[in-house]
Length: 322
Ligand SMILES: [Fe+2]
Image 1 (cartoon, helix red, strand yellow):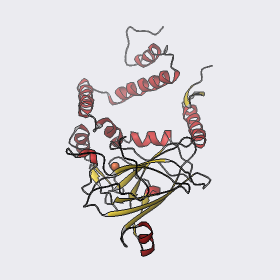
Image 2 (image 1 turned 60 degrees about the vertical axis):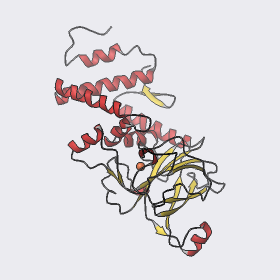
Image 3 (image 1 turned 120 degrees about the horizontal axis):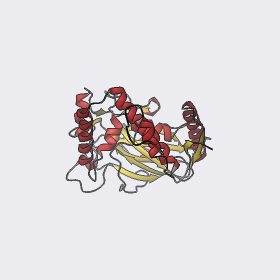
Image 4 (image 1 turned 90 degrees about the vertical axis):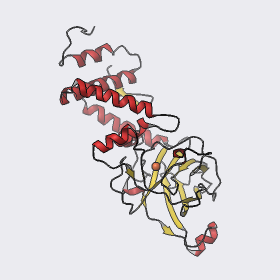
């Protein structure tokens, strides 16, 4: 039994972990063990004061109170701390040939309308038209048919539909499916760089850290098809002033694209005006198997570095104590 008396800075961690150790869910038990260990180390290493601890509690309280149906301040906090990008990289590891993932961000919704290839996903009359032509393949270069693709972008003012108080329904977002050749295409508008919501506690934190809240111009994509590892990613416009200082650390070189202009042939084929901005990209999804093999390899390494043997429960590592 753990010692629950006379606890001090030296023995409280070990005993808190012991108290939690009857948990039957081995993954939860491991998560709690590491969480307690790192939280306690944080307090010991920083010599955290009671006043600072209370400020932290109050800050997190306001973060929670700022969340509502369309605003997710906790995701924003995770984003600006670099945690969202880190978790995506851990949970969706990619071999070198695959399309890299990036942050989901706080503006994805589940109510986008299904559209057909060639449809317009934005009703904003002030947006600069952008033709988007894409392919979707597997690691062996075979087209992936029937993949659900969720796409969302800002309007011409750099805001998502959910940021407008008078919003009537989804706009600047759609769901479509790749065809038998792995092709999908649509008409959008040029996305605009924008500040993440910074009128709440996360904005105050950024200000205190002397960081700006801007994200470079980008379009979000999410791919889902049984048998393939879900891919959440985005394409960024090269040359954006915030290309190398994204507030949420989402930019990767492989996801930065150059817009070109449609020539007459492309314009006629896709029914747009000649000279319309054009964005093309060839996405590559990894299979569930490829992703779980990679995840397992990397998990094994991470636990071995802690001096622990590893076993897997539903694909997630726990220490092997047998
Ligand atoms: Fe975004």
